[in-house]
Image (cartoon, rainbow, N blue to C red; front, side):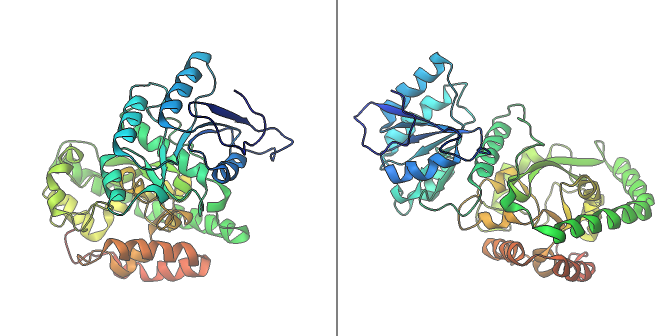
Length: 382
């Protein structure tokens, strides 16, 4: 059954409705995304509908599966995100997620569960089991929801070893950009200082590259995908400081994690680090290739550190997502206050990131730059 207006009546079991936005009931610049809502809360549906071009609604998991199968057969648009707004029953959720994983159309479609249905103790369990991609408050979005959905889709594609889907062109919604002349001046300052730094440091680049090649076989640079402002995913550059294949040994070192939970990962005296790598880390020289990221516009000289995707995927809730409103940077607030200190907690680091996101401006950036030299040499081997 198709409906061209917002649904406000309850649905019979097993039925579904489709919402299609038009220029008359929606702004013309709406996203091309579509959503799939499982539940029967008309207020939630009314809140979600204006954000998408189209949507589908099913009251239960069973009717949702039927609807999705019908969509595949009729070649209709596959939803970009699935919202689950029904009471939590682990068995039912497990069966539905298993159904999604069997479909080539939905393997990278994010599943977001309304947190009002999750009792204490089950939130962490759900996240660790990876049954859902995030637990959100469907009654309040304190972030750009479409950017978040794009980000979660990219993470799922990346972690499932699929070819990245437009990995360098993830949308960064307007809510994440500093406004007006401050943004322009910050970018001009980044370009000017970066060009000067690259020119002066070019001999240092060459010497470091030679030292890395002499000590161990493998590439000079280490590249990985990171998430920056507005969940933008980009290729992040550093000098290689570890043995080749170090990422594959990550699971063997979880017991050495500097942080007390799985949001961030940092190891003291990491056995994977080479001798040259240890020197580069202590002096922060391994960070120099990020000047190329700044020149490309992926990062700024000052901002919050861009995070590996597995870390960024855990920080998309209302309490932590604000850190992504600031630009990604080579140096920032936590680097000058807590970098290299083993007693830094996850909460402290997140709070410093959020503090910078709320306060950042050109004068604040200049103050951080002025205090950065004192933080370049780490006291601990992390």
